[in-house]
Length: 445
Image 1 (cartoon, rainbow, N blue to C red):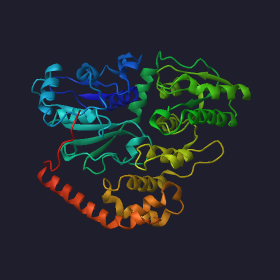
Image 2: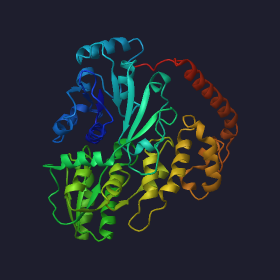
Image 3: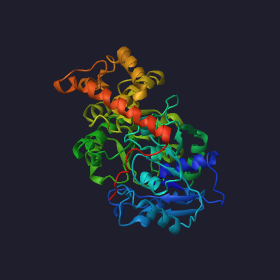
């Protein structure tokens, strides 16, 4: 069973299947489980309504809706209780005609539901995790209990940043397999036939909206300003023809100030709202520059399509992103380091980026990545001063790391943290030894 909630994720699964990373089960079945994880699913178009869905569903023998199966529960908010798990497994097996056959789960975002809920409902299933974005290069954001972690066999990911290894699930001894880039671009080539495209026919700059306001990262006013800065960056590079591709759920008014600024500058802006992957636009439309904040589509532009890309607003977002463990931090670090602005060159190359990402990942999740502490201490001693803007001194002090600043609170922290690390290490050894739970399963609602 393959769980998917986005077109991009579904395209990634198609590429993995065509590259031979999955076989059908003994009965020839591949079941696609679609999930709409929007805050209000009823207000957002279903994945199955996309023009590209029919083609992307071809490798699967059946398509079922997770939302329909669990309604009125919400896919992102619901996890079964321990007592409910056998009942839900029986329900799903009957609903989807699984019988008593073994199940293999292929899920995204293993840290949260719906992926976690499915993993709990099928406690004997082997698990593969696929990652389709820059967050895979960051650490696992929530501790995954051994009942799930011990069943994970592979992490499959696109080679978005060649040379950089994902930190996701680094705490488990699993295989990491790269999904062939050629297979992914071949899927995009098939999807691009007949897909709606911007009307602009002359070379243009594509601006990528992300709709960061609902995530609490910036206010609506700040997001409007971010779009305007994207426009100004493109104009600074000599473009007078612009296409703005907003996030599918973003309100139209967020583009208002940018359009007003475009009129002042005497440039043309087309707002392209079709639910089409940016990568399809890259392939079939005369894009010559891509501008955005920290969208994964910025790196696919440069890595997969050899298109120049500019970043806007990453430095300010990095400073205000809270808490430090926020999983958007690693994508921001990658974009901020590898891509230029309209006036500044790239800061780092891939060799330099690797150590920075590992250090930031450890400072984000020191317990999950405790095995990397010595290497991170060494890196901070050598490079911490030059990259200090990525590491708040108080946070480093809390973790007793080089460059940290001690406070009354943090002076007592090292002793407590060492005790916690010893307890965590002992827990992991016991879990590995007995392959059984020593903590309860989280309750559901």
